Image (tube, rainbow over all chains, first blue to last red; front, top):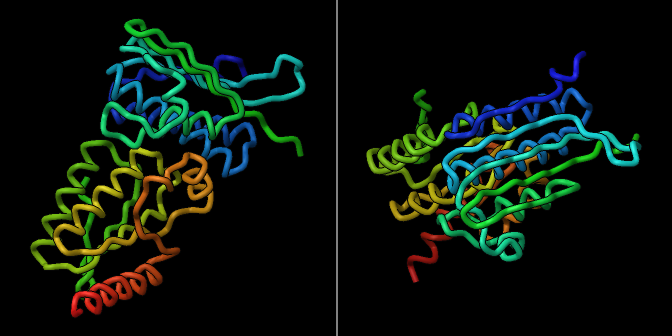
Amino acid sequence: MSEDEEMTKVNIASSADIIAARGKGRELAMKMGFNVVDQTKITTAISELTRNIVTYAGKGEVTIEKAQSETGDKNGIVVVCVDEGPGIKDIGLVLKGGVSTSGSLGLGISGAKQLMDEFEIKSKPGEGTIITIKKWLRRR
Amino acid sequence: MDIPILKIEDFLVVTIQSELSDDEISKLQEDILLRIKDVGATGLIIDITALDIVDSFMGRTLSNVAATAELLGAKTVVVGIRPAVAVTLVELGIRVKWNVNTALNLERGRKLLKQLIGAEQRGGVS
């Protein structure tokens, strides 16, 4: 299997794209051997972050691919969500959860962080947001 | 895609068969409320057994449906949450803001609805 087949990019602009993105995430997670609970967590995290893209930025993209830890001892999945939307003013507040400017539950970013093993956010007001999330396969 | 809304006694049963787009969700919400009004339903069961993911958006939608149904006099019970979905919802932190009645399956959902309605009628007398 070539490396290309292990990387998927989905343009996000509508709720149909959200469904497509999480389908791709589920597919790769399943193929990599994540258990059903972890598959569901990964898929849900993708759903939360792509939903944010649609709600706040209007459009953006998500990349889903295999990942390896820096030490090379862990395999997993990495999801990168990129948009050029309004950005986030107070990242600390958003990470606490329960805060929303759109009438939602405000659990998107805090939830995605909780569901994954690694979480990184870069955001500047007026420039956009890049969120990278990772989940590692548990050793058997 | 039209999602069938079945009537059993005074209850409506909606089975969500696949992942829904935002448009389908709003249409379903509307359809449910119209049906509640038309048949004078006192209870609503939403079966999500087929859903392998419930994100915070879907969670909020279910809770909104329950809240609006309540305004029309119908209690709502969500049934069929899969174990992996339950684990995920708890980690997501949804319980804090989620005020939805749930039951394991259709049968227990129906029982719970009857209890909820019974309790309200008893409470209403005093």
